[in-house]
Length: 158
Image (cartoon, rainbow, N blue to C red; front, top):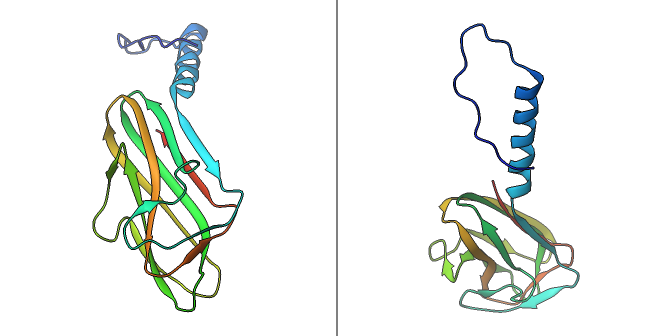
């Protein structure tokens, strides 16, 4: 469906016609078509140790979308546990087009211990320029940490 400029010259008391309703429906369909999204669900365990932020999985948790300009919603959820003898802090962050988005501890910091624990976040990035953008999930930890298969990472223009 193609976008048509909505009508703005309504008069008081004017009835809405079938053509008006159809035009609204076509515009809604056009908005759905232009929405872009990318996602990935991990299929294997990821096990790493990194004192500096590194890509969690540079091949798969590396999503590119083409935006029309505006807001982008990013979501991650997964199950973590420590993979060494000691509990450890783990930090997650988002990189957009090569630039980490948050401070020293990233978007979130949490304790990874022996028990499997689910962690998740949803983050809105506002006023993202139109064009192609790459979103990466990065982590930092002080001892070996495991991310179990089935974790999901997605990005969607809204």
